[in-house]
Image (cartoon, rainbow, N blue to C red; front, side):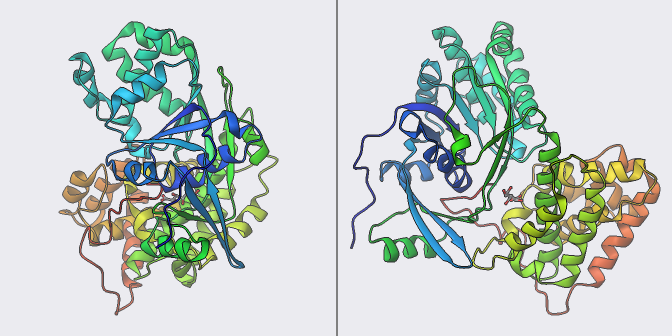
Length: 462
Ligand code: CS2
């Protein structure tokens, strides 16, 4: 048996702390840091979220892992060494120590879209001097230590798929800090820069086959490789008061106004993903490439894109080329991107992916059927998979006890209380869901709720 991957050159000093050690973090922020011209000065200490497993696996191989870039032409392998410490997220002591150190300049986050609003649960814990369990609570504990140690200003960089994610992170942190310690909230406002970013790299979960492939192709054992597409994109907007790696050397782009880029990515890529996930699962498909090959799913995507494009008007957006590139990326059948992974947490995702386009279309006096079809597909999916992972799972189950426009209204209310009052929309959504249900192939057998959502050690971006 070949030996486990291990570090032979000295590790870079920790200057970046990351919360949310998963496959996407490794293929994106860790990869960009590795490819910055000054990579030798920027090591990452990466903390897991709910489970410690990924930290244990990575720590055993000195934080090193293989990025497998998979294209139609084949696989390219590269060992990434920018993660210099992999830590169990429950080790709040280590997090606090690193954030208190003035050498730490940046905190990056991939904590899932849903986690930004969950910090309130940690306020009593912080007040009692206990150890917080949510990412927001842990971050606030770390920032309090930094203030106390006079560690100086730093940047918090959200890398989750949320519009205006810097502001969302700022609000999430401040709402906890204000309840905990008003003085700390003032210090954060004066010293912490919240950077907004749009991140992109399709990264499915790591599978046992990926681990076996690296062993046979590279001649060493790597228990934590990550398979990803060649494409990568990172757009950032905001200040880095304590410095940053030269991520631009790896293709990152720094802009003043991020909104048009964010919308393009969230609507065209993530929106299409959600359509393919819900319509695709209901129609019996398993992966993105399979769903895209189904004309009903593909047409739903194209119609949504036509609609969204009316609201994407920035000068450098190149929508036609962007759409063509997406079709190619989604069609990469060598990347088995599971629809079940994308389907998680729909009520949070659809608020960003469908609602802005639907609201803009309704405000313009049009039916918004492209975006409505995404919601109808979700509605059909939650009818079949009631109980799947979602922060609103209970409310979804309640809605599922209703029928017709009452059920549609209850579900739409979870995404947009405003649009829920639009009675024409409720009728058309209900009709679109019925249309989709009628298009379910006879041989489609849905798995029971939850069974399609595995929880392997090495999760992809949630
Ligand atoms: C996906 C994203 O799981 C999902 O919701 O839409 O993780 C998507 O693959 C990434 O944003 C691509 O950059």
